[in-house]
Image 1 (cartoon, rainbow, N blue to C red):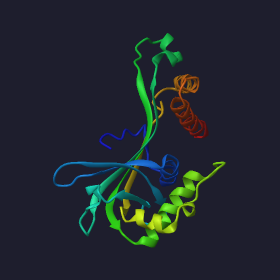
Image 2: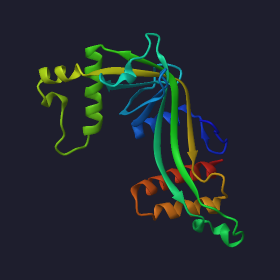
Image 3: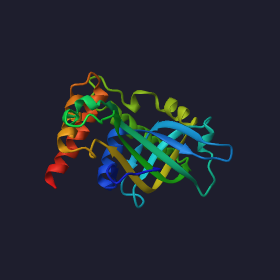
Length: 217
């Protein structure tokens, strides 16, 4: 992150791991010789591998982004959480000081490290099975990877390759109105909680978590 303001920076690994698991879907960024390359994909987090954990996913073979050197390539994975416009009309303090402007609150996590490729079919099949189980869990009429013929699944696996990003550094930007006083932060939370979209309401829940931490200090 180019300007991780101390007010908004989140460095606790357990908090960031929980956010990655919740957000699940992230942007992979690499920088080959011909410019930047990006892909959006679901990730699995192995918290026990590496100093800050390891992200595991897969790419289509026609996507040249997986063609990294044998020693690996520097890469960045970005997970974007809820975000929303914050109106200054929500701040109680505006009645005393009209010098207020809008802002944008958001939650994001960045994982930097080394990207490597794996082609072990058993490992790749296990990854796919776990991704399916995670995303089908709780559905009334859920789908299992075994519902498809095994030979068909194996054939389709020829068109993908496994990737892993061993995380060297992990940092979060949690801009949740922490720079405002308690009354204004509550005004932002209440305004977002009453907003029409789920994204805004999810952001209000994130602000609530920072309010609890603020009270517990």
